[in-house]
Length: 342
Image 1 (cartoon, rainbow, N blue to C red):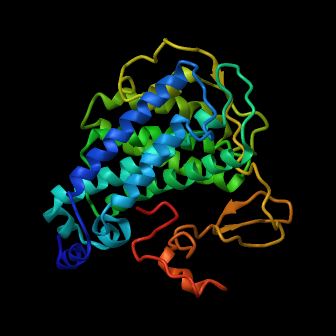
Image 2: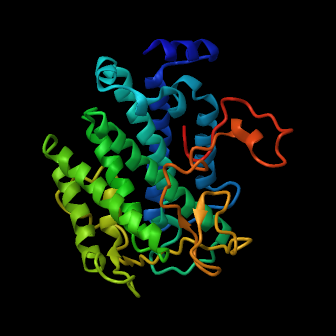
Image 3: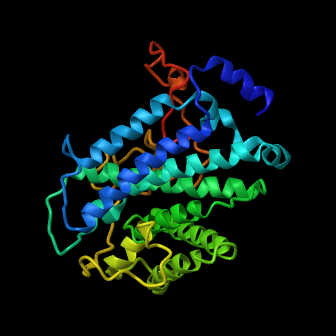
């Protein structure tokens, strides 16, 4: 690490090393995979209930965020500002850092996946909390976008990602982007289409080095083929339906790279229509909300700003509360963060 990172480390408390925190996330990821299997078997829960498995996994992620040292967090690690030479020299650290960052966002995205909460599965109609669905979709959009951004940053800095597991995580994220590309919010759909294609290219590129990923890429290609008729047309009235087995395969690491689509479990189709605005904004006439989104009209659905990455709201840090009106009396710890950054 550089001298700057060393100075930050001195200010930190206990630091078990980036590899240790990646292993802790892997434990949570394993619990998430068990959670997915119970849903696949038709054991559905009210995810918003206090003792649900969803809430317990979410609590584990929150606990992880409280112990993750300041030195390794995105804003202090400054991967996006480092030279290719620096990254290569300290590759053992940065490879673990990229792995940890991708896994963190993949867990959040998969936990809130539209397939699990928004889409209707097993032919069951369920009463679902609108505020929970809004939260789930917002989290999916946020963390799936961060995954794409991390992969883009690595490519821009010529930092070779050689871990095939990250390609699997990318394929998981791609299934979420596949749902979002059929969003009723056109700006969300356009962004999701672009990000799905970027993730598929990443998996395809990794497949040249790791042949087992060819089968994962083939399954992603099947999703792309289903969406192809809608790419250059007006927003579809009725999106296509997808066999749940194909989606489960891409979410399940044990079978994602198998040559065939699984046949076990329910074989029904899943509806893809995703509403990204389950709750109306409090003031629809406001051109920009505190969340960094814009509305094209008084009754238009909210859409991400075209300058999403440059928007100050996206890079917002709790330490900047003093810049907000009527908030100058609040003091926040310097190690606090929001908006998906870790």
